[in-house]
Amino acid sequence: MNDIHCHFFSPHFFEVLARSMAQAPADPATALPARLGWEPPGSPEALADRWVAELDRHHVRRAALMASVPGDEASMAAAVARHPDRLVGFFMFDPTPAGEVLRLQHAFDELGLRGVCLFPAMYRHPLHDERAMRVFETAAARPGTVVFVHCGVLSVGVRTKLGLPNRFESRFGNPLDLQAAASAWPDLPIVVPHFGAGFFREALMLADLCPNVVLDTSSSNGWVKYTPGLTLRDVFRQALAVVGPDRLVFGTDSSFFPRGWQQPLYDAQRAVLEELQVGAADVERIVHGNFDRLLPPR
Image (tube, rainbow, N blue to C red; front, top):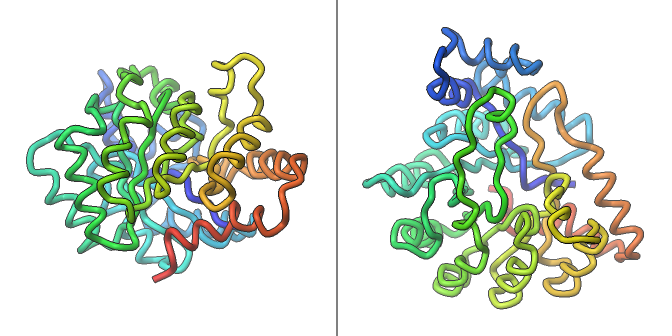
């Protein structure tokens, strides 16, 4: 199988978190994981080795790892350079500062990263404004790249655990706001994680209208609580009915160690697919083939 949604919590990730703290520790990459009960990341290369060992343990062939704070592209690039056959590099990107398109171009052209990740609720920008549209235009000019857009409800668990505020605005995360970009660049794959994370209806509408939109299945999908009676089985059944198996891509949202890769999420999703009697070829597309089609090995 392959996994399109994992997070790479590098030393720089913890350094950025520490900037938001009233009393930042001297060595955030050691002190903050200790406070959380996590393993320290070590160097980006060491963390990449840890990830590949974990993927081996669970028989995961390839995974997309996301540098999970803006400006951490170099860490992700180091990880991918160490394991180019196993890891695909994504990076979080804030399009609001002036001149950031140069950073975006550098990440694609010089660092070899392949997925740019937008979090509009975090950085409070509309998905159809000029700043965001430049991101789609830049990615579309580089075949083999994707744009990953977190829509719907957003909460960053590590910030909550450390007592840091989550000052996000979910109103910026409506999947329908992606229609302009998806229509303008129809050959650019756009990945919407967590089935829209609470905007399920809107995510289905977008994907139905725009064939280049793909839904990832990652996380526990706890957002179903916002729709009375909705279950993960219902979500998969309706998504399969609207977009089909070719545009669902398996993911877990795995992130830190020692918890590691989230086998229970895979098991739960496979159980739902079996319950729905999804054929073996379609299951293979969801958990394996669609990833390789969107992000073919280089």
